[in-house]
Image (cartoon, rainbow, N blue to C red; front, side, top):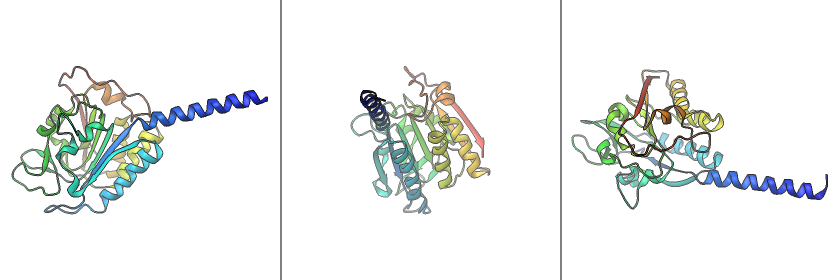
Length: 249
């Protein structure tokens, strides 16, 4: 083999590697973790451990950028994309993972650190994010109890965002769940719907009910994690219809 061919092959290899790196780093993720609460039971150390799993898969393996990581008292409503302008929290990242308590308190809500029962205080409800997820976000994983029991309300957040993964019942802060989900979506390039189904069923094998909402039927069936396969286009204009499924694990 002559030197010209060797140089050309090296240049092609460098170009391919550079392109792959740039493609992966174009994607971003965000994480919110609340382990310790003022009145609710502690979830420690599962939040910290799950964050490490998310970071390993998305940052170290897939090459994504971390947009933000907030924990404990630093987590507030704006991290969940409640604002229409300025800082838009999870709506500025392609994928968001949240671990913390979810409660059904006259409607399901994400409990923040100083959550109190009985009225809308230190929580995030579906109406707080109605038609707000309209920027960069594609998928949100809510590792919390109950939230998607009010799936019709939470579907309203999906202006152009693609979907939400979560639970309609009590769930468990199990590290195996997150690791399996990313194994299937990243190592196996599975569709998100298949990865979530297999990860939840294989992890819990119990009365836990997992659920999934997508803005369109095609997003529900065909979306992959960014960079791991096809990603369906955003629904434009948004028609307020959605796809939903739930199953007993």
